[in-house]
Length: 417
Image (cartoon, rainbow, N blue to C red):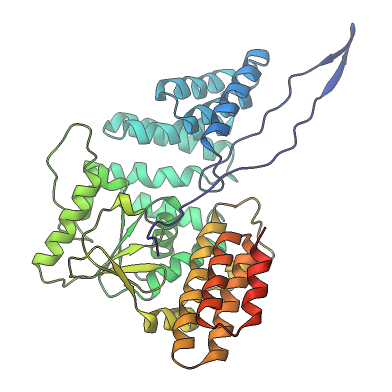
């Protein structure tokens, strides 16, 4: 099985309509409103689509320079399409100049400052002011709390950072499927262990559970992207984490994060692996080029002492987690807006794959009916989330280890275009 895991995805499908208005000289057509963008935590567009939207919003602002929304959307499209920071900073600044009370302009401006200027404390304070301004103007928009956590941690304000996480959770910014995934990441981890994560959707939710409910605060969540920053590595070395994170030698063009992570694992090895290290299944393999063997236990891989670039499955732990420990009800909740949060659908595929693995092991133990129940759980998850490729792979595997199953062949047909 490939260790690459899908991390997140974003794409709102808003109808575009031409608005006609009447003037004293007759009828004129206003510029069409392009598709609006949302955070990549929620949906992810193809790179080309971001470039198309950048051009569309640029044209919109040329025709409607007095609309702050246009400048904000242009700034977002620029940022997500890879434009230079000074260009999207200018777009957000223009939006604020047009309407100083436009909340999203302050929020996006503040959220864009930190990733590019976090080494400057004055810029971080500026970002905090902009984010707080956004909250004051629109208290119902809780997105600024995401970046407030990073900003406050950067300045050493851990209490303020924790309060930002609590506000994020209590304000509804973390939907139930994400919170349940966070619970499942933490629930079966060894005491005082370390979990490497990849992005927003596997980092903020477990941290928020820890800060709000005190759940498994002994587990250290280590974000691989943040490991590229010196302040974060220094923070991990201090209380309450006390992680032996080394300070990598600086190499031009080489991010220090992966080297710091590997250095941390080497330090754990020298200490006799007194603390267990895990890698979330959401982590891309190239983001953490391990040479250690991995053991899949559920939504986490355990890092094993052996130096082998391969992995195994701990079926006893996988079964215990799926049957007893994990919260799975929200993984196919009909009341949840999956179309809005389409980035979460691939994450739910991790559970489906686990059920497929459990089914095969159960069949080989002699329990054919138990195997069928497990594989159906996984296939129904795939069908619910439209994961046809994964569903077909699970069904084909089923047909391989249970060659007499006509039901497996029917599921193959169901997932075949």
